[in-house]
Structures are given as C-alpha cells and as structure tokens.
Length: 245
Image 1 (cartoon, one colour):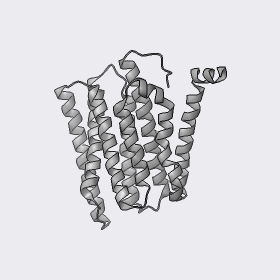
Image 2: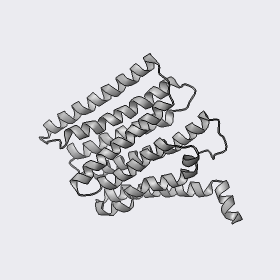
Image 3: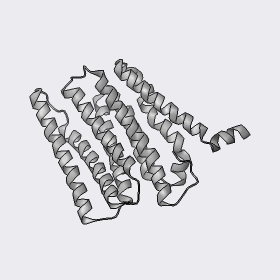
Image 4: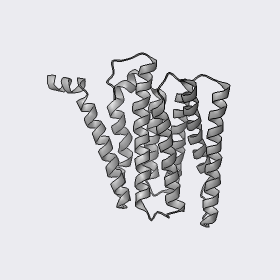
C-alpha cells in the first residue's frame, strides 16, 4: 500500500497513463494507415476515457462540469462517427458540435468583455468560417460531389468557429494568463478538420497518411485542452498542490 501511495504522490502513475494515451493514439493512427477501420472501436472511443482517468481527481475537485461534459460528448461522438450507420455518424457530428460549444462556454466564463478585442476575435472567427464554407463549396463543385447534410456540416463548423472566437477572446483579454495551450489546441483542431475534408474531397480517401495526420491533430487537441485547462484553473484559483504537467 505504501508503494502505491508513493507512486501516486510522485506522479509516476499519471505519467504512465499519459503514456498509454499516446500509445493508443499511435495505434489509432496505425489502424487508419492500414485501413483497419473495424478495429478502431478499440482505439478512437477509448482516447478520452484514458485521458479523463489521468485527471479525474482534479476535474471533480475543481467542479469542471463544462469540461467533463464536453469530453463526454466528444467520447460519444468518437464512438458514433466510426460506425457504418449513417444516422449514427451524423448524430456523432452533432455531439462534436455540443462538445465544442461547451468548451466555448468554458472559455467565455474566464474572460471579460472588451469591445476591441472581442470584435477582432469575432472577425477572425467569422472570416475563418466563411473561408471554410467557401472552400467546401469550391471543392465540391470542382470534384463534382454533393455535400451531404450541408446545413449540419456548416453548423458543426460554426461551433468550431465559436470555440475559436471564445479562445482568442480570452487570450486577448487576459494577458496575465497563459492561454497558448488553447490557441495551439484550436489550431490543431482546425488543421485536423481541414485535413479530414481534404482526405474526402481532394485525395478521395486514397492517402491514409492524411487520415493519420487528422487523428494525431485530434488526439493532441484533446490532451492540450484537458491538461491545459486544469493548469489554467489552478493558476486562476491560486492552487499549487496539484502536480504540474
């Protein structure tokens, strides 16, 4: 028992579980590279449960309801989107939208309103969203393909834009807080989605390396969001008794 307590205190167990998370992420990439899509049920949906296991104490004690809710929604989406039932795949997209919306609310809560910074953040998010929609329309017409459930896809993109707006707004309005992790996470999320759309409309799913890049961006986004948000909350509340990452 003493040895177990010592392991917990020095953070060794947490580091081991983090290592397992990235091993599963590597396995997810391998499954995509080898087109072992059915086997991904053992990798993609387990990423978030493993990640939450690492930080469960901090998440509960800090009352991270929004963050936990976001991760649960994303976990459900991970499971639904790897299924071959169309309704489940589109339901998964809706759950991702819910996940990003909850994350956006989380970052809105830690920032105050400043007209100039908020306007700049909103402008950047809107330009990015319009650029994405225009790009999708151009790609679909250039490759003579129809975008299924276009409104749902654009709603999904809008929630990513909302998350980008909230993170950038918090970053510009809170100079004393280190929000670089959130900026990096959102950039990875956007790159992952651009990569996914490119895989569909440009490479026609022939390049599995593009799919590996998409999965890597998504997994790293999850890790940065969860671990970074906990460190941020510790800093805001002046807590220093949790192990640093």
